[in-house]
Image (cartoon, rainbow, N blue to C red):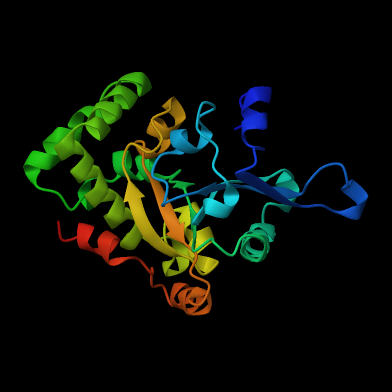
Length: 250
């Protein structure tokens, strides 16, 4: 969510890009738009991308395009896959403009994680000791649960527990049709991306902690793999990096 005019100006600096689809009948309002940060290295905190006091970089020196926000402005068109096409089109334009870009990733929220976490204790692949550490996040009112999750995300052992649970949630928990439970994951995996990294403490805003315990993830778009990744998704397989897969065995 854009917070202010200063925030908007920050998102339109020289090392940022915004791509949108318009319709001739609604030419003043985009149907959907995606925001991209041109950076070095794969981002792991949304605050770093949105900081207004950050140092801008020369886009020709960036090696990574990070898609950090996609907004559908028309709720009645929410079921139409404009976003799938827009991300790929934006990546194509970026590759043409900036051949120096080698990596195309997202920094994405996990909107359903905390609901699953708090409602499905029986599914947790954890020891009794680790389950006890999570009890505070399941008790009391909303404010106390959010505070407990925030504290957990800042502790070394707590962060590791959240990483393991997030990996389980992405790789094992399924919705109808044997598809991933998480809606953002379904979107990007169906679009041919792979689950690349999971970051605890990536969004410690109140909403970020309430929805996802502060977790965000990178989906990697490696364009030579898009078609095979999409086919795997259709077969109920989540394509993920070795780093993510290894969290299940941690």
